[in-house]
Image 1 (cartoon, rainbow, N blue to C red):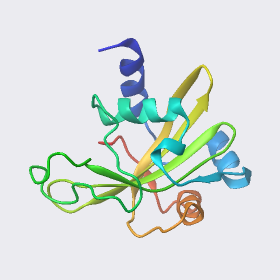
Image 2: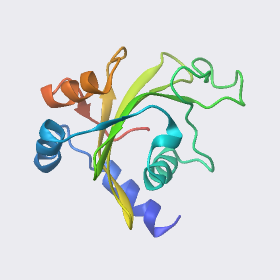
Image 3: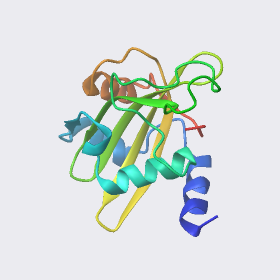
Image 4: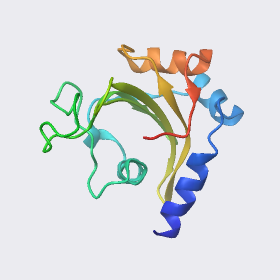
Length: 153
């Protein structure tokens, strides 16, 4: 395991229920531009997602694209996650996605801090399904509807 992955996992394991104050303030007042596809996310953010997901490829489909929503063994060629909504500011990205697999589907939100030299996982949590836009996701995070968790992502 690389040092980068170990640091990510250590930070991931200590995610608090509440979003850190510095990110809460930025999330509340910052301008987040909507990102409509995985390729629209900064390269560092895509790499960090791949690290968090623990795979050799970025295991997430674009909004509306097919993915493994049910049993993990069915349609093994499809990604197990699907992007629902995302947005980035000049330094942070908020990513809301659905995770399929065994049992009921789940939804997750991740906040990643990105810069040209490094991207870091800052906070993530379990989310309710059915949040249709970036603004509804942002409101849910700020209201405390979404509580932090340690994954799995």
